[in-house]
Length: 109
Image (tube, rainbow, N blue to C red; front, side, top):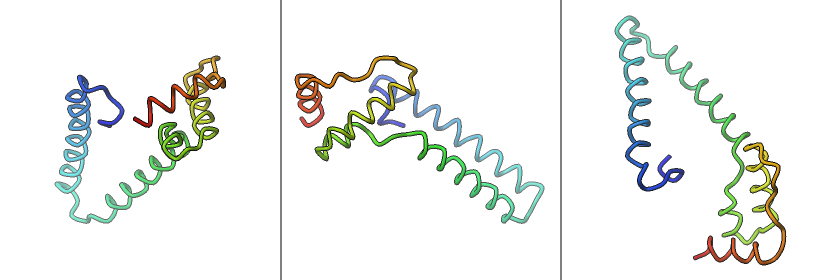
């Protein structure tokens, strides 16, 4: 999560992550207060993790920066286009050479 926020918002991101950790810890403690068997909770958390993992891997494309570092410009442009469609933007990334040179210069420094 820290990679996706600006420096000035990193403390807020940390607070949000800690809230989710606290909720998870409270649910786990409450469960073990009434049940001594750990397997159903383990199974539920594994299925929940698998469900979330599959959603994230389907919805999130590879990073355009990763494609640029690997030298795959077409993959980077496809990733940019996918992101713009997710944002419901009608504008696609320009394909002319000056923009491509600018993107490469910005991401490979």
